[in-house]
Picture 1: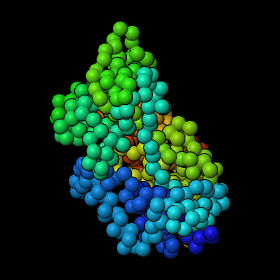
Picture 2: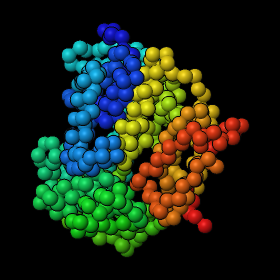
Picture 3: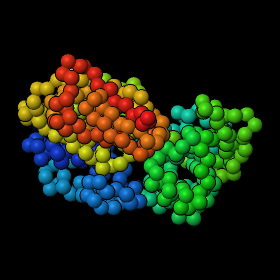
Picture 4: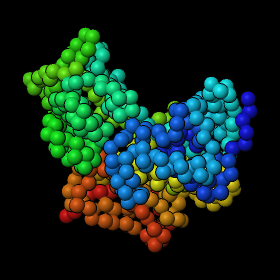
Length: 417
C-alpha cells in the first residue's frame, strides 16, 4: 500500500520526536507525521513519575508525565499527525520507508525529510557477561520502573542494584519508598555514574549503601535469585581476588548504561560514530544521508530531557527547511576533535557560519578546569563529571575568530595551572 505524501516523517514519539515534530510544523512543513510503535505518544516519560523535568525549559519542576503532556497538547494543536501502534520496518537511502500496523497492514512512504528520534535502550545482563545461574528476578532498572510506576507491580522485596546510572538511583529511592529493602547500589567506577542531585536525593538522603569500585561477579539461585557475589575491582575494572562476598537478595536490577537505538539508521546507510553509537551529524543535525536528520538519545545519551528537546528541535527545524527547500547550502567543513579529557562532541562538524550549540561529556571527573574550544571560547569551571553534560553556545562573534583555513577545531577540558 502506497502512503500519502509526507513532508517530514519523525520516527518516535518520545520527547525528541515530539519536539522535532512541533518545530517542523512551526517552521512551515505541511504534513508532519510521527510514527510510533507504542499505543500512545510520550515515550518513557510516562513511567518517570518523579520530578526534576522542565527546570531549564519551563523554569518549573515537573514530573515526566507533566512534561510530556505539554508537548503532546502542543503537537495536537499544531496539527501534527500521529501514526501510533506502527512499526517502521525499513528505510532506504532515498528515504523510502516501510511501515506496518495491524490496522493498515504494510505501508510505504517517501517523505521529503526524516527525523530519527528512536531514543535508546538499556544494556542487559547478556551485554555484561555476568556468570552464574539464570533465575527469575533480574531486570533492567527501566523495566522495574515501568512495573512499579505504570503496572503497579513490585518485582521483588530485597534488591541489589548494579550500576549507579540515574534510573538505577531513582529506582533505589522509589523501591525504598514502596517498602522494599535495597541492600546496595554497586558501581564499578570509583564515582557515581548519574547526576549529583540523584546521588544526594536518592542515595544519601535514604541511607542506601553505595559501593563504588565494586561489581557483581556472579548470580546465584535456581527458580529465583537468592544472592549475588560482589567483589572490589582494580583500576582496570577487574575483580580483586579475596574481596568477594555474597549479598542475599531476591532481585538484581541492572543500571549499567543505555545505548542509542540505531538499527533503522544502519538500514538507511547512515554513518554511525563508533565510540558513542549514534549518527554522525553536522550542525544542522543532518546525518551522512541527505534529508535524514537525528536528535535526542538516538544521537547520544542525554542526562536532562530539556537538552533532548532542545537538540531535537534543531533536527526538526532543519528537516522542515530541507523539505520545503529553504535550507541554506552550507558545508560543515570544520571537524570538532575531542582533546584532553573530552569524551565526545555533538555535532561532529560545523560550518562556522552560524550560531551553534555544542553538547559534550568529559572522560574523568576533575576540579578547577578550563573548558576551551580552540582559541575562540574559554570558560573556567569549578568541577566536571562524566555524568553531567556540558553545553557550549558559540555565537557569531566567537565564530568570527575562527581560522577559516583550518579544517579542525579541538575541544579540551584541562585543569587550570
